[in-house]
Length: 219
Image 1 (cartoon, helix red, strand yellow):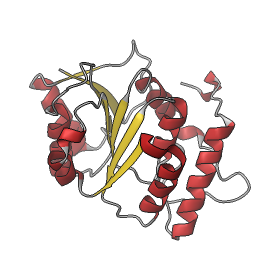
Image 2 (cartoon, one colour; image 1 turned 60 degrees about the vertical axis):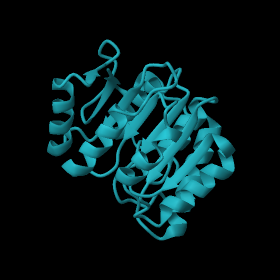
Image 3 (tube, helix red, strand yellow; image 1 turned 90 degrees about the horizontal axis):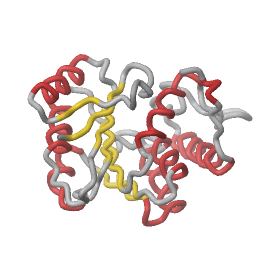
Image 4 (tube, helix red, strand yellow; image 1 turned 180 degrees about the vertical axis):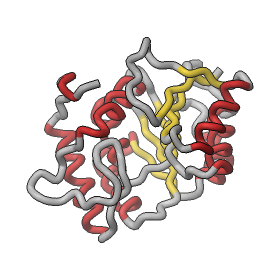
């Protein structure tokens, strides 16, 4: 989809992007890629908050995926740009994120998000393969899970198992956004889950855009 679709980012969201980028710069680390920016680049200069065109389709996908959702669980906060995007676009959603905090900027960005969104945002520092099963009872009302953590087969498999078999007390359909499905271990894991009848792919009548992530319904 071309960006000419009229991507209009609110002044409030642009401020969030700017503030998160300042948190990254404060840490002294270069930032991994996100919904808005490329890999390992300092977001700096007068127009530091301007997102790149190359990830527009990902923002479009996430915007659609979060419509009507009430509680999103994200594995892999990174610098929090996805969290800020979701929380600004959906004014009632709750957002919980698990991240091992391998980057110094991650807890700084999490603190900023907590100060801005209060109880709507919660950050759990730790390995998702351990935090998820230990605290699963806190996530049973989650109706959207974004998996963008470790890319090894063992980690991806564990995150998928925990997401698929998480008890559902909300009575709502649960979906999963799975990133980096072009990466062979992740692609192979999700294909097996689909073939076993645990997941089904959804594409909004071909409105799920681009290659590299999948939108899945938990069966």
